[in-house]
Image (cartoon, rainbow, N blue to C red):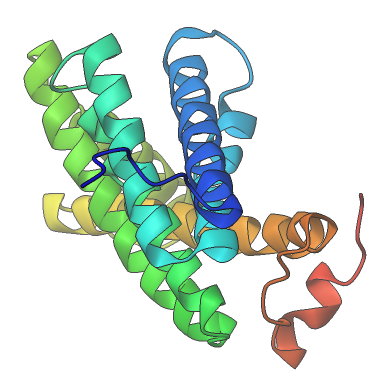
Length: 217
């Protein structure tokens, strides 16, 4: 009885190579986001896309394996706290968007649930990083919310003074608006880039088609 391992098929080999390559790409982008002083916005936009592309090309199992590989790689390089933070929200978003686009679901569904995942992931990161640095980082967001609320009151000449609850609500709305723009930007980038890689995503709904129809690439 032969104990020689069976050779990999071409498809299995491609799946392994693409998974390793795109997981490593995700890890490099995460390292660049953390340690390079410039390009943060571009790195954030690019971060979920390699694993989403992997899921579109090789299926949901490959996408999950790629995410696990990226997290293990980053845990080895950055430690047991900063490495797994890739999951929140970028890893979760990558899996969710790939899942939706593989099934041809509407942008409204993938976008709205993506905003929920993005908001949840952002809040998890704030909590974890606050524990790491020993300072409540939510205060920074609260100050930004208070500043916007003060400007609105001044512009509208409202005779009110915002209380703490109103300031906290404004800070939370800032996070949600940021995620609305971010997740829509991910959809637009994938719509422009992925067809060139033979992995198209569903067409945008008519209401959004004019917004993304002008391909800058």
